[in-house]
Image (cartoon, rainbow, N blue to C red; front, side, top):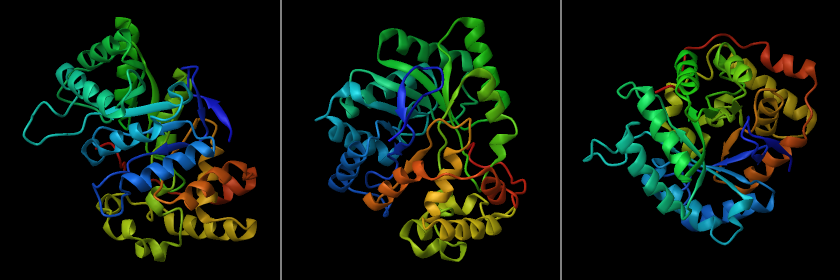
Amino acid sequence: MEYTTLGSTGMSVSRIGLGCMSFGSGREWMLEREEAIELIERAIDLGINFFDTANVYSTGESEAILGDALAGYDRDAHVIATKVYAEMDPDNPNSSGLSRKTIEQELEASLDRLGVDTIDLYQTHRWDSETPIETTLRALDDAVRRGTVRYVGTSSMWAHQFADALRTSDRLGLERFATMQNHYNLFYREEEREMLPLCAKEGVGVTPWSPLARGVGTRPHDRIESTTRGRTDQYLEQIPYLQGGGEEINERVQELAAEKGVTMAQISLAWVLHKERVDAPIVGTTSVDHLEEAVEAIEIDLSPSEMAYLEEPYAALPIAGHE
C-alpha cells in the first residue's frame, strides 16, 4: 500500500479509500453485516486505513457495521470519514439538510453508531440551498472546537458554491473545508473544468466518488447489466457515462487491459490514481477479490501516451452528481 497526505490536513491516508455505501440492507446488491466486516478486515490487511461512509447509507447501518469492524483495532491507526445532509427520517423534517440542529443531532448519532468520540473527517454530503453557508460553517467549526470532529470536508457542488464556502470561512475565521469528494472518473471528467483547478489553488484534498463509473469502467459496455447492481442501480440510468465518447473509451480500456494482462477495473482505477490532483479515490466494492484488484492497481504504470489514448474520445457531458 502507498500513502499520501490528505490535502492540507497533515493526515496520512491510503491511496485508496474504502467506500462503505455497499454495507447494509438498503439495496439487494449490498452486503449484510458479517460479509461487510470480512471485507473491512481484508482492507485493513491490505493496508487501507481510510474508510468513507455516511449517515444515510442504509439509514445508519453502514456506520454501525464500520464501527463494529474497527472496534477491535487501534483507533488511531484509521481515518474515519462520514457525511451529513440526506434525509434520515421521513417523519422528521429536521433529519436532513445542513442546519445547526440537523448537524448537531446527526453528528451525535453518527458518533454513537461508529462507536468513537471523534470523527476524523466530517463531510457535508451536498449543498443545502435552504441554509445560509455561514450557519453550516459555524456549526461545523463548533464541532471541531469541541473535539468531536477533526477536519471538515464536503462533496459534489458547483465550483462557485465551493469558492463561496471557502471565502466565507476565511472571512469569518472558521474551519475550512479541507477536502472535496467529487464525481470524477475516466467517463465523467467535467470536474476538470473548474473544481479541480480550484482545489489545486486552495490546497484542498480530492477524494473522488465513483472512480469506476458505477461499474462502467469494469466491464464491456454491452455487459453493464450483467450484475445485480447493473440491473437495479437506478442512479446509473441518470448518469450518461456512455455518451460523449463513453463507449469508445470503454473499448479502449478493454484493449489496454488485454495488452497489460490486467482487468478493466484496474486500468480505470489506475487512470484516476495517475491524476495529480487526486489524493485517494473512494472505491466501493462487495467483493474481496475486487478489493484486492483495486489495491494492485496502485502498481500499474500508465505512460503519458496511454493516458492520452484513454482520454482522447471524451466529449463534454451534462453535469451529473450535484443532486
